Amino acid sequence: MADPVTAPTRVGEDTRMSGPEELLSIGVFARRSLLSMKALRLYDRLGLLRPAHVDPATGRRRYRESQLFTARLIVLLRQLDMPLAEVAQVVAAPGEVGAQRLVEYWDEIERRRTAQSDLVQRLRLSMLGGADRFGSYTVYQREVPDQLVLTEQRHLRPAELSGWLAATKARLVSTAQEFGGVVGQLYVIFHGAVTEDSDGPVEVCVPIDPGQSESTRVPMRREPAHREAYVRITKAQFELPQILSGYDAVEQWMREQRRCCIGSPREIYYAGVDVRAAAMTDEVCDVAYPIR
Picture 1: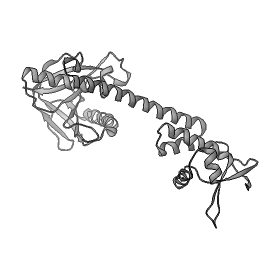
Picture 2: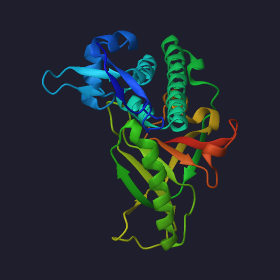
Picture 3: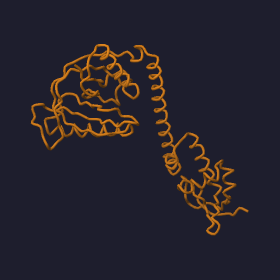
Picture 4: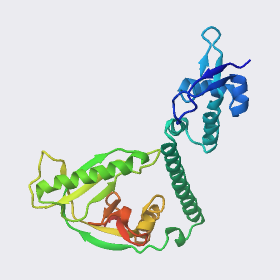
């Protein structure tokens, strides 16, 4: 027989006491919430959905009827393949905050699916062969003079890359002011692939006046003069995996021209260009390979 209890209504709502509520056994609550008793016990251990009462003698769990809202919300969020840690944040947040977390989660899913869809297309074209798999890239060449660069290098996984690059670029640009400011375009050298199976390393380089004396206080090095082959990348081509076609195009050109790569590939960013604010057709960086 169910017992009445005076208790708060549900997670995310006003926690002042309301009227008496019925306590449901775990079996009844599981049936009405569409959650298994095994799942309810797990959510109890995780602090995601705790019973309203646990009998100290028998360990039997009982739930308030108003907790059905939270339980059914968990069921629906899990149908979105939302991880339990994310579910806990959505459920625990006040209404508008929780709703915003849900929107942000789904936006990220959509971005990931778009990237994966583009990757499938790129792989399909690559497997079919032919020049079309490299898109409509034009490969250019230029001479790059000797440079003195402030540098920072790190091994990274894909999830860490964007945040680390932004922070490191800002830090090195700020440090460059001690040496007369940035001279030329900053660039990022990928000494190894950054994937779930490979962690680079990745090096950020910020050019400063090459006439400066090299400092032992701040990490810097000389980048030797070289010739490089490169392609221009628009904002639409900038995100992964689209940008990989730019790398492929330069590599294919080097094979066709019988040119040797003499250094790691790099992305060279245009001074004063904010990639995030750029229009999709704007050129935002070059993908380049040192060659001879």
